[in-house]
Length: 198
Image (cartoon, rainbow, N blue to C red; front, side, top):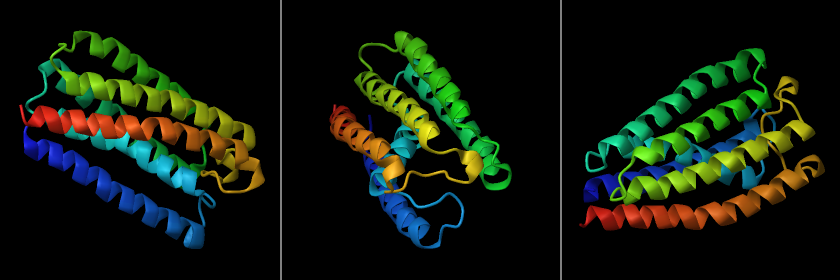
């Protein structure tokens, strides 16, 4: 890995965190669409975008990864970029998006990671480390979507879990997920930076 690619990944994640916190403040004061968002879900938004878009995009473009690793991340990134292009207009204009759509997509992407990592050489520690992190994030996202579907529906114009009692379980589960995934993210960034120096 090049030090530049490692710095790009870390910088992108820090900038994303600032954007997500800013979005949470704005959503809770001016967001007419989607409802209020809890602090746990602001941080989850950061974790999800980081794991499903930012990290795959950075690794896809990292020329020092194995060919199989770059292919795995490229397809994964394109799969989530396509989802964003479909999901956001559906949420904004039709309210036709359902939690089941997201769960199905997450399951397909998890299957892709499981099949694709088999072809990644053992020497590509960066890809293998981040596959573990992103796979756990996908499982957590599927659980979150299921729990959300029990408390609210996008068809009602509610897209975020607020701090209300209706979302208490979801928020507790999300804090647990973050407590598990955040150290793994830090470890993945450390492996990425360490490999950049070798």
